[in-house]
Image (tube, rainbow over all chains, first blue to last red; front, top):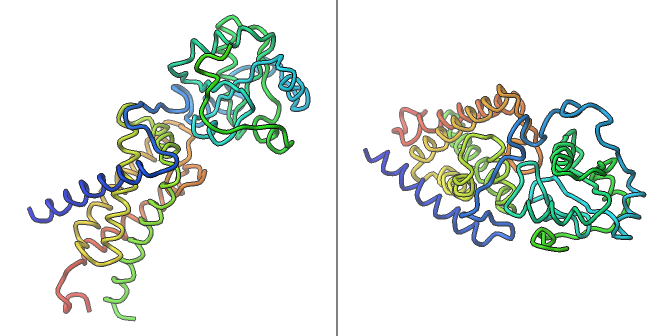
Length: 175
Length: 140
């Protein structure tokens, strides 16, 4: 009995300690906000094993250089399909965050993307097809010119292209 | 090196291991929550709570093992947690879920090797729990 009480004390004390550390953390988890898996079907960090989610050629790819010029000219909408924490660490300027499982501002994001002739989707590129999953979803929403960024985020970063960090301000109503 | 010294070192090693595991999670609780969610075991609403609780429990129980206070309950609790980790990892691998394990920060991909490592940690924690606070003559 004493042993169980001691275990319970460690459990409760440790939990309280964890809550305190989370509150002090620079990247805390929001306790009241549900956290979903990276994808609701298939694999977790990837929506599906690389190459298995859609036939090759389903989506046109776009090179980093071409995407960069579209970014500068603001003629394309950029969509980041990675998890929120990765998005917050760094993403293409003014990109919309839209992971495969969606989020509360998804309708706003899709509406905003309709203002662009071209939509460029990217993910972490680590053998994942998150971007393809999101691109497929956007196509079902009626967006026709949806492309996948060749080399994904690592290529963008390695190419020294502009980036910004932080949460997705664009998701909350940028035209 | 006698048996008692070996058990003391093992206790401290297991304690330090869990302190390190907690330490790696402290800079990014939000990323750890996503890693937990990717196991697809918990309801999404409970994931943030577990992400906040787990590092604290690892830290406190690990510190107790390191300092030798409440060794048996701390080791048993960490054993139970490791058993849950093994079950969670195994179900993910059997379901074909491709995920990072979330064990020691970074982007370590979960494999059966990760499960084997957890089994070793489990055995070590159980040994510490079993031998803890025994009379000295039983240890030497």
